[in-house]
Image (cartoon, rainbow, N blue to C red; front, side):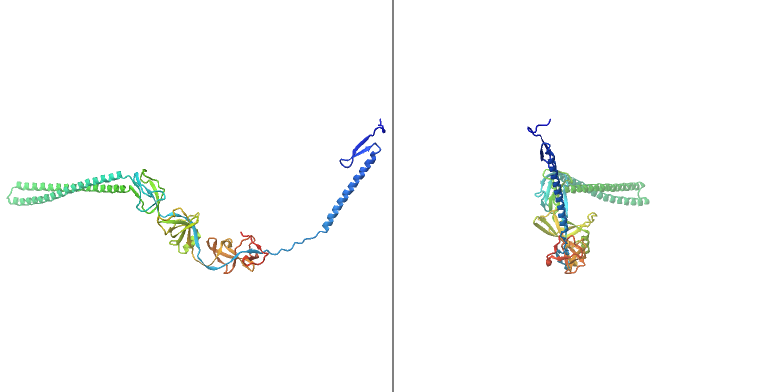
Length: 465
């Protein structure tokens, strides 16, 4: 059943082309008219959008067709500003600088030579102490050693008395032998006389026989006396040998007694002290280390090239040197002389190790073994050579000079180094401007200008490396 139009109105809402708008239609007759109006509006919007896009494309085409063309300007050749110095030929006398340390040219481990208890030490027997030759380092209890000396002296006195007794007996036997031999001669004469008388019949055979018996008896006595003398001589020699043996023992005992006092064998500095009063020491126990004050040496190292140059210039022995010890801002310099080189060359590092003996010596020297020092040696003479900063030499075989505003390569040979400088010889003439500045584009023919001479303000500064 249709609603009554006079009492009520049926309405319908439908969405339009635009989001969020509502088309209110009153009754059925008005619905078709609202639809046609929405379509017209959508068509107008589409046409406007297409016109806007076409206008944008046309504008872009017009801008592209009327664009201006930019042609880059040609860039001129780069000129680098460099630092230079003039090459000057002269006779150069470089100094070889080596680094090393102070070493002890003479040192000794002080050891106890006898056994015993330490009963006294010297006034300067301590680490860092300075002692002079003959100063007492320590004394070991000498009681047993004094007793041994006294006992040996008594034995020697006794043995000497026995030797004297044996000598007296020997003298007595020799006197008796002389007398027995005299009697024997008399007996021999009696036998001869009795034989003549017997032949004449003056005496009997019995008397002759008795004379002969007495002669034989005396002859036997002389023989016994001679044997006694030989035995007495042997006993005296034994006593003499015993006496000499005791005298050797006494000398050894006296030496041991003297060794109870350990004294400094030379002037020097003590270290590693390990004994004090009350210490019980045995033979060969080390009690201290002593470094001689008059033989301090600076030990340094030379490369093969440096050693070869010095060898060609007369060798190292006797060459003067200066040893410098730096202590913060303080510098102590000592004159020295090369005294020796090592007998072997280390194949790993090459070169040689040398020793420079310090001319100054004495206990007042502040320097000690182990100090790090700088050693300067006069190198050989290099006539007609050029000295340049090391930065000017490339790969140790070439330099660059300026000729007509451009770099030119010159080959050189490095002969020696002196700190930050090198001594070279080669294709360099006096007065040539050697380039000191380095930059990546460095090569023969590159245009440069000397910064010291001024010139083109447009030149680029080379970046030094």
